Length: 372
Ligand code: SF4
Image (cartoon, rainbow, N blue to C red):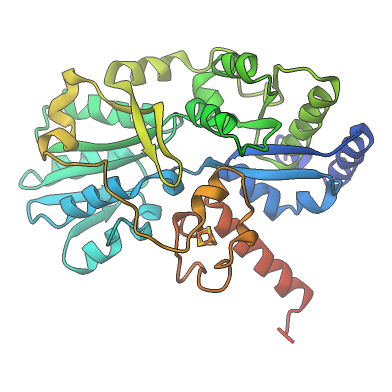
């Protein structure tokens, strides 16, 4: 199949891994930003192909994982109101707030519905005029344009019962925060192809310039990722700080201008809290004052910041900044498992801890199908 099989070819993967090993003169540490790439790395066993002195660390590119407790608390508060229908993607239900999650709000009688698209939330608002529909808008630059389109659709339809609880996050400021930390060990980034599809790769030029850290835009198939790693190693070995675009079949320098216009029409940049990483300047998107009537935070007078995360043994902040691997967390696979998660990275389908758990389990089962 064109554009799938050739990007999963095991022989090509082995050749690329050999080329990476041949090019390396010293150890390097590379961070892939996106949770989707983390899952591909684990699913296809890429780390096992790569040289031992190449370390891949996993970044904060899972929107569910980085949504802070304060916003979950606000969503839980809304879901507990009789007049509100809280609409969300399924992954958000079990993410812990400071004391409860959305699943417990639902179990306690809250009207919590799952959708696959923000436009489904608009349809729910049309179909339920007696209810106040709040769409919990979580995600990076990839999902923000569709959420903006939902607000514009609600406006066009004259809906007065549709609101956004906006928890969008922007990726480049998080990369800057990681690189600014004294404990940072990231020497190059693999940037998420789908974010760059929307925003283009020009956003990374100032980061490369300031931090002298190479960035390679990569796709999500194993060959994409290995090609991206090879390009990153090339740049590191040459001492070159620049942006390379491995995903040129999809990503351009300027990105999708129409999607960017949609975002700019509805949202403005703001400072934002990240779970485990604290407040990062200019890393969020909130509704513009002209769309205040759709802003759940304002309409319902919610307080989404200054709330402390529930103290747990979860080391998600360190995982999301690439300081440790999920398996370095003492709770991994013991107190923290998908059915009893202590933190969002074990809950989310894009979470790094979930990826390690899932694919390590599969490997164990393949090696020992009878479980002896
Ligand atoms: S394994 Fe669980 S407790 Fe540890 S960092 Fe991951 S989500 Fe948190």
